[in-house]
Length: 553
Image (tube, rainbow, N blue to C red; front, side, top):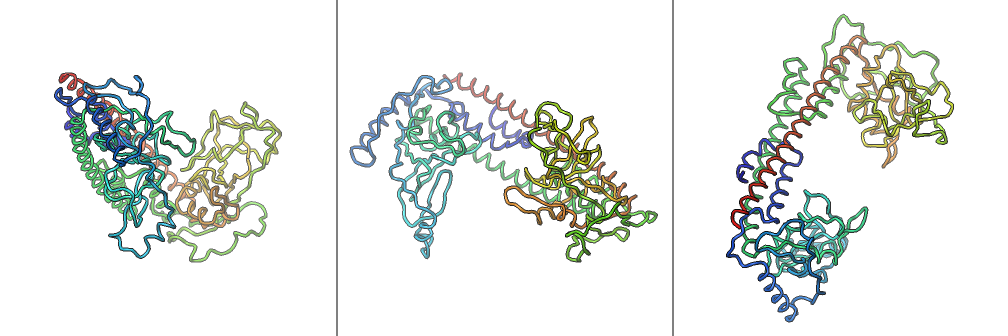
């Protein structure tokens, strides 16, 4: 298969995760392994090129243009992971490029701002760091094309992201990027090599990877003849331009689909009829499942998902059993607290008017165990971000001590986490499952008991809607780990429908959520299929280029 055919088939591959990034990486992999363009027997071999490089390096040292650098050991036989094509040779990066790290100079942001204040932009020069331009400065250190290789803060182990890049003209470079200039060899080819190189065992640091100069200059390079380098760079530029066009087309398609999706959501919101439902699951475009879920729940809690039935008894709060103490959350709901209008048969209540929220107990860790025991400890890890109970399975935590019956859950109890140990968990609801296990009510979890006016399943979906989650986010405390309290939860306004309508809403939401789940499964399958197709085409294309190269040897 030819690369042109590969690009023609891209529409079938676009759903693969990171499809374009993987295509760009594949092109570079072919390029630096001698599989992108054919080798020509009349090209000057890289062995002769390397001799010319050494002569030129000696001249530059004698003239004082560069500093003399330490002699590097020969490249090991196993340093290059693939057989070298005809005419190629293995060399160290420092053999074919001069390292100019001694010329770089860091200047902090405050000093740069002071130096450029009030100066015309035409008198400023780009200031570069590990992976990109960091700002501007009123002077320059270099005035030529250079290859920058990140020293630290670089995604060395992400195959799809760059580690090296080119700069040119009058520039300034700080000490977070190694500075190289190819001697006769092409900087763009060296850049492509460094962006595909495996840095395993070459960088240090667990949280912030660092590539020191000694480990940078002896990076092994598979060096082609200079003429072939030029053909490779030209072909890569040509194919990357194709990728750019594909990317623009994809962005245009995504923009168009996003507009269609917004229009479909708006149409369904204005009239949530079966006829308009088909636009939410249209084959021509895909609305993100997360957006569908949000839209469905927003309509549900606003009374727009199912029609009101004039035969329903209007909503009323039938009260909670037992005496209740005065609470901070109590009080009339101000007009400014109401986020939307309700149908005439609905009413606003504070959540505390229709529900009791009970805190859990701080069980002694002396009785925690990973071995099966009479009780299962319920934790924030038991919640899905979009609601629902998560079985911890192998990470399940048991409790072997005595437990007050008041802190033993019953199947069907509705609970929410009061502490957000992972993004999106604060207030996420879950029903205790009826799976034969005995779950206990741990601290920082809230158990909700409702009045007879509420179907717990309707409350479950309310706790998943943007309004409720937004209210908890607005009133919570803590920066890294967010916390809420019973008073903050119970103060949230609650849209109360007639009980019969609550049941119709729940049935409709569950029906639509099942469709969304099905769509999500189909999208995942589509991405997997596209990924597998991409890999198959890559393998076919690789075989084609290997056969083509062998035919010219």
